[in-house]
Structure formats: structure tokens, C-alpha cells
Length: 324
Image (tube, rainbow, N blue to C red; front, side, top):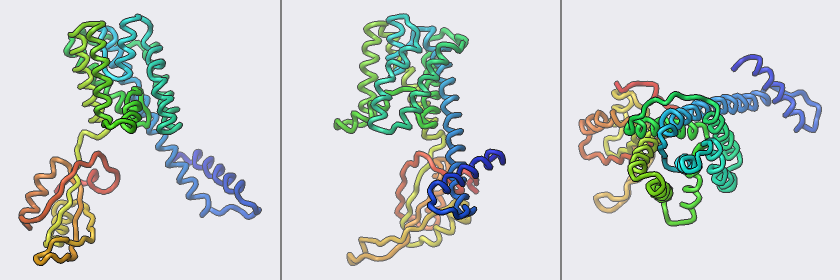
């Protein structure tokens, strides 16, 4: 971090420590360093998150004004409600983006946390500003392209905003709240909300518009999944085998992947007794899974393997080193 900013953080940390101390003893570097390090992490993460939000807002604005709005298309969620109201009243979309999302953000402040709600209010207000003041070119009048790419840019915006710790479409908050109250999943609640929006759209606008709106929603939802969860899918692999040491060496030396060894206990022996065994856990990408299975079979075809999807990960060597 910039030396000037570092000096400011050091001074803030020193004053913070002095205010908590009851003595006039000088503040040591050992006391200052952890606080400064925490400040630096918080600032760098905040900058990264707000960059995500700004990119997301401008992307969503492009999807709305460059594709959906000029062609009277709608989408799902709170954005779809706003587009539907705009089509009915012909008032500016920016007003509806704030009014429709406001109840969801109030709900978020009560069910999630205030920081998330404030950040979401800022993101939605910025989106309303962009939609109202920033001029985007109308890209195409082809209905299929409008549905697919309008949904793509809108989904990119929603996903980037979620990466930044906020939402620009508040229906996810309502879905989380209702899923806790009802015996429904978040996906079920979102599906019901969007079915209602598309049904109203079919009645007010046309069935054709509603069908294209469903395509827009699917395009946006898939893009959000890619942005939030990552294009590259990771798989967590648990391996239980009597030849665990050979497998460990294969993963580390041949595949250049890290692994974790759990001390386990088998519950089904030849005579029913339990016995000690090491359990290997590693993470690979979906593309690397076939190679890993081949190498495991070379060592132990009877190895018990458990695989599960890992949404995202941080640290380690999987993102830094290609498979050998």
C-alpha cells in the first residue's frame, strides 16, 4: 500500500491504542502492526468490492438501456417489476428501480445486516442514476438478441454487485426471508415470484413478450451463476484407500496438487472391528478430474472416492500451478 497512506494508518492505530490505554507508556510497533495490517486488509477489500459494484451497475445499465428498455422487454425479479411498471405508466425507470427495491432493502437490514443494506441502497441508487443520466446506444431490435444479451449484461451486473457484497435486485432478499418462514427453498421462492411477474407481463403486454422475458431471465440467471460461482468448477475429492501413502505421493509429486490427510477410523472391518486409516482430501478442477481418476486407478482400483462440487476457493496452489 502507498507509503503516505501507511503513515496515516500507523498514526490512526497509535491514537486508537493510546485512547484505550490508561497509562502514558509509549506505543510499541508490536501493538501497531496488527492493527495497521487489519486496516490495510479492510481498505483493499473495500476498494475491490466497490469496483465490482461500479462495474456491475454500469453493466446492468447497459443491459437495461441498450437492450430491454427501448424494446419494451421485461425480466424477472425486482428489475422485471420495475420494467413492467415502466411499460404500464411510461414514467422513468430509475424511479421504479428505487421504489420497488426499497422494501426489500428494508427487509435486508432486519434479516441480514445494516452494512449489506447500506451498500445495496448505494448500488441501487447508483444504478438509478446511471439509467436516468447515462446514454447507452440501442444495440439491436432483434428480439432473440435482445433477450439473450440483455439478460447477459443484466446478469453480469447483478453477479458483479453480489461479488461486491450488495444487490441491485432485491428479490433474493425476499427469497431468503420466505425460505426461512416456509418449507421452500430459495430457488422455489424465486421461481414463484418470477412466474407471477411473467404471468402479469403476458396479460398486460403480450404472451410473446412474456416468453422472451423468460429467455431473458434464464440468460441473466446463468450469467449470475458464472460470475458468482466462477466459470471454472472445482471438485473436492475424498479418497479412502489402504494405499493412501502411494496416493498422497502421486497427488503431490505427479499431479502437483496439495492434499490434506485426515486421521480416520474405518467402521467396517473383516470381523466388524474398527481400524485406523488415513483419509486424503484434495481439490481439482472439473477438467482435471479424469486425470486424477486415472492415476488413482493405477494405484488402487478399489479405492473409495467421494466427489462434491466446490463453489469457490481461495489460497493454496490450485489456481497458481497447472496440472503436470
